[in-house]
Image: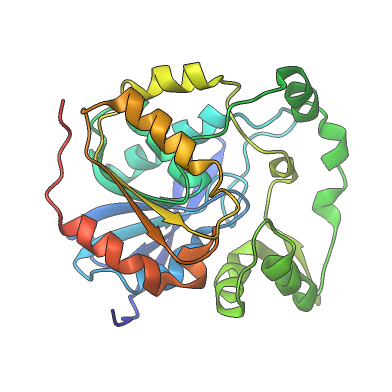
Length: 296
């Protein structure tokens, strides 16, 4: 599949605590696709993939709150999972989109799934890359204690780094590695220049994983209401490969026959959509062209 550089514009969408920054690709007359990155990433992580996707679609790729150029959630309290889910509603309403296709990675995929359950009919179909549902919280007390220990994040926002240090961190100081081109795609939105150095554009509260305090049974209760056609693209060398099959099985048991649910595997790690977008794009193209509908 050949790459075609798409024209890009930047927009800020109003939300009650500030704005959501977004990159806009293609004509507004095209079929609408909302693009949402994973935790601690930004809209740049989809640049390379979007350039391989069909021209006739209108892509809006957002920075989630506290990522990239978007405003963080109000300070002084922990981050909450369903505030990110609610952010998707605010974005769609700001765009005046009644419905759209949803393309996302990891955490972005998870919140899209739960959005489609809470706000049925708003997402026409979901393209989820290496993300389906958050893992259940095993030790609720410990998780809550860590979540509310906000003092440990107080100095993180003041640290400054060279570009070389930032690039090294983007490539190697994460759960899974990025190649140089993938890291470069993330760099611009990841930092703000301060003199000759850079500070990260990310909410330090994100150092603690943002998950709902749910058991698997509670997740299953949610998934009984899931009815959106979905393709899950799983990276075969992802750090999540040991947990995703069980999550897929739990989701399918809960969904039963209420939705088309496709799973495909590609070679690569958790960030395969950014490292090797050419491995992911054909599956997305096929799903976009496939006539899938909710079975409700």
